[in-house]
Amino acid sequence: MTVSDPTRGGTGQDETITSGFPVPDEYRFRSIDQVRSGLASVHYLADDGIAGVVYLADHLAKPVLVEGPAGTGKTELAKSVARLTGGRLIRLQCYEGLDESKALYEWNYKKQLLRIQADQGQDWRELEDDIFSEEFLLTRPLLEAIRSTEPVVLLVDEVDRVELETEALLLEILSEYQVSIPELGTVRASRIPLVFLTSNNTRELSEALKRRCLYLHIDYPDLDRERAIIETRVAGISEVLADQVARIVRSIRTLDLKKDPSVSETLDWARTLVLLGVQSVDAERARDTLHILLKYQSDIDRAAKELAGVDETS
Ligand SMILES: Nc1ncnc2c1ncn2[C@@H]1O[C@H](COP(=O)(O)OP(=O)(O)OP(=O)(O)O)[C@@H](O)[C@H]1O
Ligand SMILES: [Mg+2]
Figure 1 (cartoon, rainbow, N blue to C red):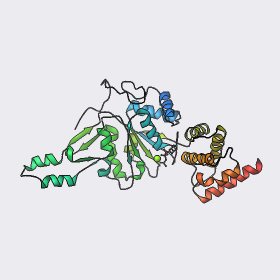
Figure 2 (tube, protein in one colour):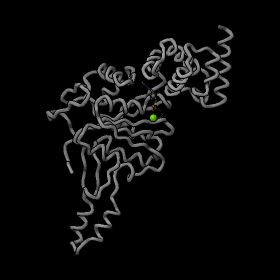
Figure 3 (cartoon, helix red, strand yellow):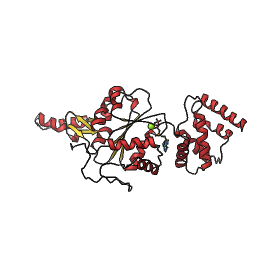
């Protein structure tokens, strides 16, 4: 197993990755603008705040903790950065009950047992060294990201779903880019991965975790960006319709709803309208398709009422 220095500077190694995206010696990105235009080229539209944090994550070698409402592009950001840099996306989907053996590594007990059974009177120490070697190790996403010799983007998705104790598993990785395996030693990253953690803020994350990360809050996009996202992501939509959709969604978000429409729901709605052959969305069309945008009947009723009001005044 390679145990190497996690610092990345001055090795002269070729960091040119794929798709003609030029990468200087040490860093993936040269400027915030380059991050933004690069992300746009893979259909992710970032504002200055998002692009700035990604740039800093690269230059400071720090993980990014991305928080914000559902469906605002938190997970998609990590995927898009992977696409842009040509890095392999390694994803750890968090859930309640996730433990070390699913997040980091576990020993292949069955194989170890077979090896012990097949033993022909070998010295126990030798046997022990043997069964706790690489061959018997099952690597899980976190260890895999640290060991990878290729460029990696590590996505720890929905980290607020794991218990506080499990969060502690991440700390060593996030600050040292290393994993300690008692039987094997410390595995250090030969290339520091870009790391994104996402959270819907269903519970407070620990101070220890937060301290190790750059913080990025992704909120609903402003009108111009949401319109641009619709145009980028919805095939065959006209500028007029994209504009209308963005405006209506924006006005619906000002209502006091149980659950505001997310960007992903905006996109579903826009796609629906295109499928229905709608050229221009009036209040009636909007009302008929509100269930694509909103997921509570009380919210649908409320928005329908609001749209009816718009109709009367227009
Ligand atoms: N800035 C953006 N540019 C382009 N597409 C976007 C952007 N933001 C969101 N989207 C679209 O919205 C969809 C939903 O985004 P994503 O799954 O990343 O949300 P999320 O914030 O991770 O939500 P959740 O908290 O529910 O997991 C994406 O698949 C993408 O199509
Ligand atoms: Mg997500």
